[in-house]
Image 1: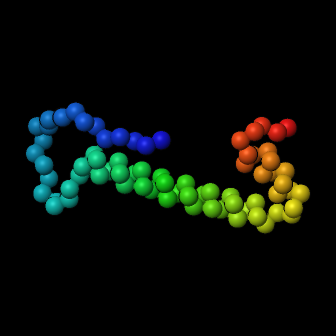
Image 2 (image 1 turned 30 degrees about the horizontal axis):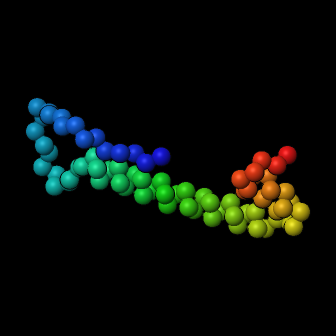
Length: 73
């Protein structure tokens, strides 16, 4: 699920720090979303490689059971 940044303003009595580091909720959400997409695609690639290593019948069973849209029992 995409995480969206906050759009409401908030105020703080604490002055900003002088570390030259820019913090934005929008940037942090974008970084989080891109990391999630990268990890997700790597996971899908690992699963596909593992399924492809199986024998024909084991692969056919897994593909029919988990990788098709119709529920097959």
